[in-house]
Image (cartoon, rainbow, N blue to C red; front, side):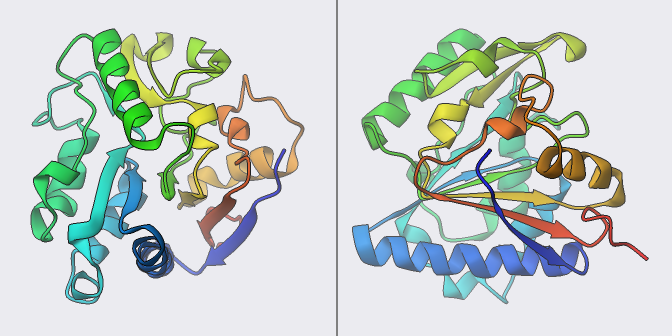
Length: 241
């Protein structure tokens, strides 16, 4: 397994600030080098804190939003206004509050047939990136070791070619749309955000235990040539007092 860089912050507020600083710096670098910055957003409470910080006065004016291209790591099989939609969360926490051209926000269509939506999103990624990848992908870690919507024992874990797939998750009795591990691994940087003591045992298992990606799918995330960074708060790192 690719050894990540691990950074531990005191709490979720400091974790969000570290992630925001990193994203601002990476976006500046990508825009200077190639004229745009591509990022895939993640769902969850920890990313939400980051998005709200990026939209705040502390960071909003430091970002060249007009040159951002926003994608998503995964989506539930729901419409864009559904409370469970990752897009809806990102829109309410970030996208509605910054001067980002709506044409530069590329959501997964959870409201249509999942297979059709996956093909459409995969084609978009192929058109945009060919054999390359995004500048930065944000991921989280589920209590069961999943990341994006790559859940233990599901068909998407065996995908080797497609960029995006519809993945049925039996334990949820639901379809999910997700970027695949091979495509995530093309990114220039992958950042895993984890907070809370409920995740501490799983973090240790993933990072220090044996490789078992069928049970711990996040272990499939091994960037080909990019950087892998885990940002943990003290509780997730097992260092809570």
